[in-house]
Length: 130
Image (cartoon, rainbow, N blue to C red; front, top):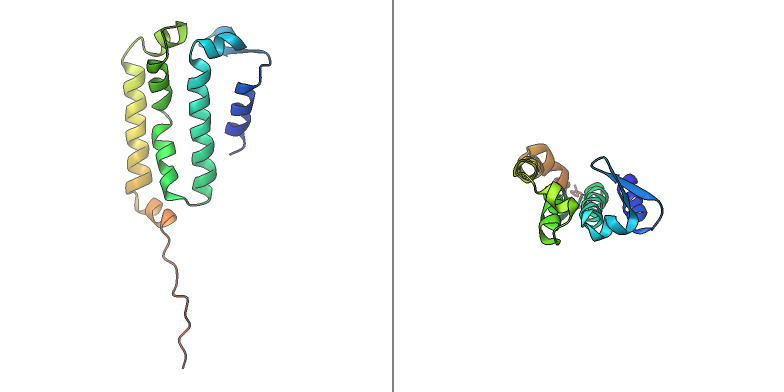
């Protein structure tokens, strides 16, 4: 729960360089390539999902469902660069992200234990008078 917000903070602070796909990438190139925005989308969805899931907010399950697939959508919307070419070079990566999203959806929305977690049965508030 703490790692994703810290990583998001480090993404927006222009310090050092990043290593992406075994390539050293300066801060400016990270954002110009689309990698920065894809990573930021991933970490922000992870942050929202983690914190709100702890608060039992049912709507935030969608953050976890979208988390694996959204970086590929961001890469597809970004102009062509080394990052988008590598990320979208084969259909295997986006398809596997969609499969992971589907598995997360099934787990978070259809498992009985998750339904009980997000919609707990609360006891009646009134106490019967004798």
